[in-house]
Length: 407
View 1: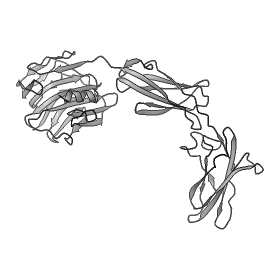
View 2: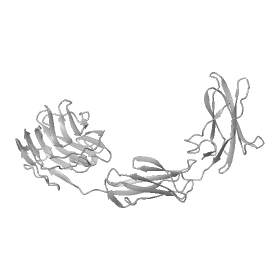
View 3: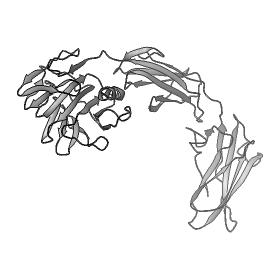
View 4: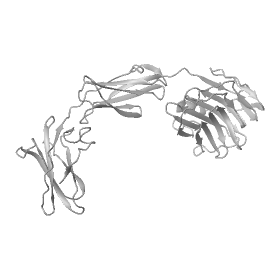
C-alpha cells in the first residue's frame, strides 16, 4: 500500500507539511512512497474530495502512470480547482501491472493559506534606525514584531549574516536577536515574517550606523627619530646597532643587530589591532622579526620564504603567489590585522587585493584572541631597513590598508 509523504517544503509548505497540513499554493503536489518489490511497476491514482468520505464529490483526480518501485511519486492538483481557506481531503492507491489494486491510504487533509503576513517592525536601543548608534564592538539587541497572529518565525539578514528566530507572544508576535556589528559605518538589516504555510511578508529594511571608536594609534616614521607621532605616545628606545638611511618615503631605520622598542604595550592583543610597515630585507637568512609584542609577531620566515604574521599559535603566511616571494633590496608593504569580532588573522602584502588597484596578496585564517603584555619591539634580528611603522588599536578596513600600501 502506498504511504503518504509530506508536502514539499520548498514549493508547498513550511512547518505544517503532514496531515493536517497547511500549504500556500492552490496547486500542491500530493505524494506517496511505493515500496513494492524491486522490478515491478505501479500506477498510482490520487483523488481530492471536499470531505473524508466516498460520498463527498471528487474535486480532482489523476494518475501517475506506471513507475518502477521502490520510488516516491507525486501528482500536482491542476490549476483552478482549489481555493484558499477551505479544508481538502485526499487519498491514493496503486495498481500493479496485473491490475491488482492496493488499499486506499488513510484520508489526508490540508488547507490553503495564501494570506501574507504584514511587514514587521524593527527596533534597537543600541542601534536606532538611520542614526549613529553605539561604538564598534558593542552588542546590540534587535527586536522584531508582527501584528499577524500566525507568524511563527522571522528571517533576518545582517549584511551577509543571516538566520531565523522563533516568534512568540499572543498579541503581536515578537522575537529578538543579539548581534555585534563587525565594522563601523553603515549596516543594513532585512527582516521578513513567515507563517506556518511559508507565506512571507515583504522585507523590512532597517539601516543603522555604527560609531567608530576614538582612534588610538602609534606611528614611528623613523625619519631619523624614534618618536611616536601618533596619539598613544609610545616613543621608541634604540638598542644596539641601529642607524638611519634612505627609506621608502623619507628616511628609514637600518638594522644591524639592534632593535627599537617601546617602554610598554602599544596594542591589546586580546582585542582587534593592525600593525603595518614598509620593509626592505638585506638578506633572507633566518627568521627575522619586523614587529612583535607578546603573542603577536610580523616576520619574514626564511624556511618557507614567505611573509608571515602570528598571534599565539595561529599563523598566516603570504607565499608570494600574487606579489612574489620576499626579495633582497625590494621595498614591500606588510600589514598584520587581527579582527576580534570576526575571529580572523590576516597578513597583507602590498595591500588588499579586494580593494587595491595595484597587485597585492592576502591570506586570512581563523584566530582567537590571545591576551599578552610587553613592549612592542621593531627589528629583532632584522637584516635591512624598516620604514613607516604603524600600530592601530582596531582592525583597519581593506581600503585603509590599500591606501597605506599605495604610496
